[in-house]
Image (cartoon, rainbow, N blue to C red; front, side, top):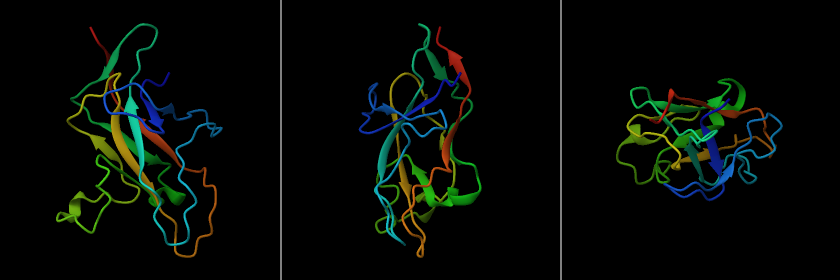
Length: 152
């Protein structure tokens, strides 16, 4: 059973909305970006992570261990995806701290945020290589890792 769920569309911080991202491998509800032309960056997409109540039991992440989301597998086109905690986290033009810009393919960690049954937002962006033609790349998933505990 997967406790952490990802949501797309227009999730609202602190709410329980958005469209659940598919976890079935059949790509029935994937995180997807509009067609990206060669050498271009995709639109920044708003996503959310939360741990919905299951079978009447509430859960939360153990804050002693960071929750992570990683483009997976770490081969192939994973370096064409990047994740951020801020919608402006991808903007290198105004960023005075180059370490704040997320690396392509790197994991995103929620180190100080408890994940529970309310949306915690994060942002996703994809890119295309300079000689790449538009393609429906379904080889990358978003893998989540968390220690989850029942709420007393």
